[in-house]
Length: 154
Image 1 (cartoon, rainbow, N blue to C red):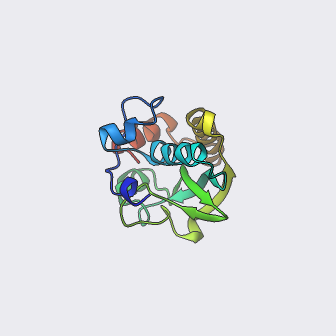
Image 2: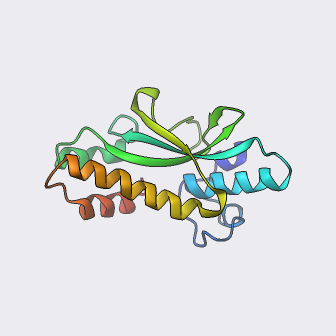
């Protein structure tokens, strides 16, 4: 886990190839944790589970979001993050030197993740969270915010 945590945050070119994280020397929360969960499963460690961790992404826990939040006068955006649950303890290897992406007070909810459908389920959960958020904030440009998130890799 230590090695994977030290790999830079960047999208891999082939999400279907779990070895891509090691071959390309990078990964996102999804690809890094999926590779580790698959390895754990193959080596008989059923106690290692993938988890969706939904939190309030804000300027304090992810500074690159400050500009988009200020532009639309928002305190936060909901974000779906993937991490590992090992015997009830959450582990995050997305970034070197960080535990979870946000302090406990920014936590919204967690849900177990299916290793075989991680990318599909994350996208679906993200859209549901954003749809609910946009419904609470009429006039919020959903497309602009998603383009910003993709460009900033947040």
